[in-house]
Image (cartoon, rainbow, N blue to C red; front, top):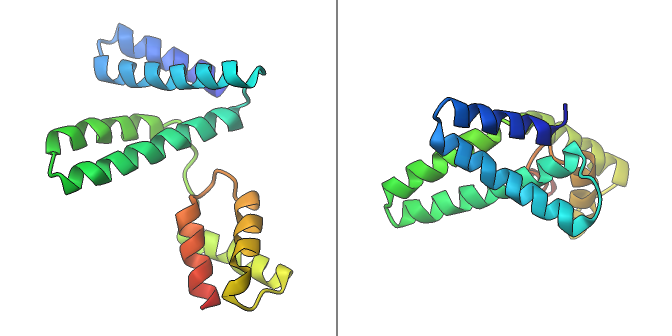
Length: 147
């Protein structure tokens, strides 16, 4: 069963069980997936769907950060629920130690010695770890190792 099918099945289950908030969150996710599919003119793979969900998770985290600055606990709770629901459909991110090992390996492979080549390292690492970690984590680790 594809990830989209799983989302759809879970949405109907949430509706059937009276979980209004969860069903609304899944409806929005499915709408985003449908929009991306229409825009791309092809069937989306599970990786494509995960990318869409990761983008939504990133937006939600940014919104939570803004709401915390404004001290809007009511909106933080709503966004936190969205975050929790969507993260259930994404693979667990790699630990920082695992990412560090990959970065160190890439730095040795590319024979990088200074911060000037951070872009080269970032590109290689992000290509290898596609979807398994976020760019900020990689960037911080690369900067830490190269500095």
